[in-house]
Structure formats: C-alpha cells, structure tokens
Length: 277
Ligand code: BJW
Ligand code: ZN
Image 1: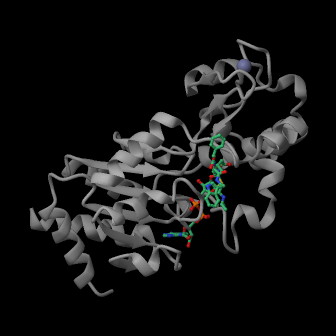
Image 2 (image 1 turned 120 degrees about the horizontal axis):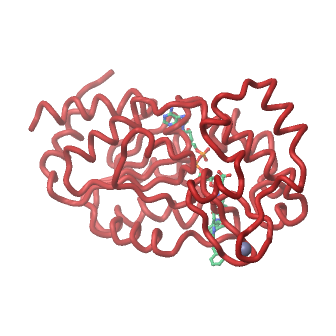
Image 3 (image 1 turned 60 degrees about the vertical axis):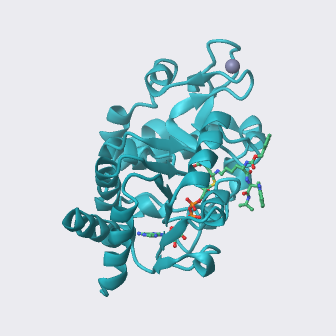
C-alpha cells in the first residue's frame, strides 16, 4: 500500500480542520459487515427486480411479498455489526468539528457505531412510513404497531426460525396498520419514484455546496438526486476523494481515488490524521 496519497489526504483534512467536510456513503460501507450491496455481481438488484420490491406500486400490489423481503433484510442487519470503516467515520466526527456523514444506507449501522452528525437520504429500515396518509413512525413507535420490526427479536432468530416464523408464518393480518388511516404501513425507506425527505435533502445540499473536502465511499453514485452531492461539492471547489473497490462515474473527476475497501483506507487516513494534529 502506497501511503503517500493517504498522508496527503490526512494533511488536507488537518489543513481544513475547522471547515465543512462530509462523507457521502453507500452500500459498500456496510458490505464488510455482511450486508449485501445493490449493484454488481452479488448485489440485490442482480437477484431481485427493484420494480417488484422497492416501489409503492409493488407494495400496493403485494404488501406481503414486499414485507417478507424487507424483514429478511432487517434480519440480516440485526445480526450485523459496524465495521472499522463505520468506526473511522465516527472518529472523523470526533476530530473534525464540522464533519458530516451523509449516507444512502438504510441499515443504521452508522448510528450503532456512534455517529451523531449524520443524514439518512434514503430513510431507515427500522422506521415505518404510511404512504397512504404520510404518517412517519420512529423506530420505537413502529415496534408498537409491528412487533416483528424489533432488532433484538430478529437478531435472536436462527435461519430456520426466521424461515418458519417470517417467511412461512407472516400473513396480511400481521402487517402493521397505520394508527391514523388504517392503511398498511411500509418500511421507512425511500423507494424508486419517491421523493427524498425534503429537510434532509435541503441540508445535504447546503453542506455539499460549502464543503472543502468530500469523500465518496462505497457507492456506485448512480442514484439521483443523492449522487448530485459529490458533483455539487466538486463544482463549488471542494476536493473529492473516492474510496471504492471499483470505478464509478465519479472516478474521472475525483482528486484522489482509492481502489480499495473502505475498511482498509478509512482507518489509515484517521491514523495519519491523528499523527498530524
Ligand atoms: C465497496 C466495498 C467496500 C463494495 N469498500 N467500496 C436523474 C437521472 C437519472 C435518473 C433519475 C434522476 N433523478 C431521479 C431519477 C430516478 C431514480 C434514479 O436515480 N434512478 C437511477 C438508478 C437511474 N431516483 C429516484 O427514484 C429517487 N427519487 C426521486 O428522484 O424522486 C423524485 C420525486 C420528486 C417529487 C415527487 C416524487 C418523486 C429515489 C431513489 C431511491 C433509491 N432507493 C434505494 C432503495 C432504498 C430502500 C432499500 O434499501 O430497499 O436506495 S435503491 C438503492 O440504491 C438504495 C441505495 O441507497 C441506492 C444507492 O446504491 P449504493 O449505496 O450506491 O449501492 P450500490 O450497490 O449501487 O454500490 C455499492 C458500491 O460499493 C459499488 O460501487 C461497489 O464497488 C462498492 N463497494 N464493497 C468500498 N468494501
Ligand atoms: Zn396512514
């Protein structure tokens, strides 16, 4: 591993210590925690058609199928732990006073790792959203109307029990019903064709416009409007650093591009940054 670009990035962070800096992340950040990504060979969209599972139309047509798929993903996430890349981002937040983590991830592993200043562009899988009346349920509220959406319950289910209780045992009657309109409540994520939470997107755009440094970590950077964020930062004069196993549409415009895993690169950057302070 050539440490020269790592040292340069650490120096850049140290020089811009008091300025706005943000990390834009995607599924690759959680890949080494065992959460599947969306695109690529082993990606979810390689096995499942997003139109059948991640749209409101699909949910209206077959809510049971959609919920079984989301409960499977919740079960995987409940059993996963944050990885060294999540913890490195928490350390960056502790060292840099104006650091933000803007994520497309719905798994919440950044929260579990202890991240405090984060924006979730595509929502959170542990929350609930009623598409019929717009009601939003925080994690602790959602568990009341949908006891299956409980991390501790899911974490302790073996694969066999998960199949029996969720895949075979789930019925329409067990799905969560909205306390306001009685519609079936869906997961608190943003599906294709749905708007991103407005206040979150507005804040993310404000951060991107003024940031001096932006990381793009483990994202294919093809889903919009989220993927505008690194582009916007660069357009306003920010330095763009990409960390990804593969090339992405951002690679040609990135100032630094690390073709390696986030768990390898981020802890090295943090170590170098600590040395330079
Ligand atoms: C590693 C690694 C390791 C692996 N280390 N790296 C402009 C142009 C074209 C299209 C559009 C546009 N504007 C809007 C659209 C339509 C659409 C869109 O963007 N489509 C494109 C795909 C073509 N956008 C939307 O529909 C959005 N809504 C919208 O625009 O609304 C407008 C509206 C306004 C007003 C009223 C109504 C509507 C919503 C998009 C929602 C995306 N939802 C999903 C699912 C979330 C729920 C769930 O989890 O089920 O979000 S799709 C999926 O993609 C998920 C992700 O957050 C998102 C991004 O994926 P991500 O994170 O980048 O993952 P991957 O798998 O793609 O990439 C992983 C990367 O990691 C790879 O590059 C690997 O190499 C790398 N990697 N291991 C480092 N260890
Ligand atoms: Zn409702």
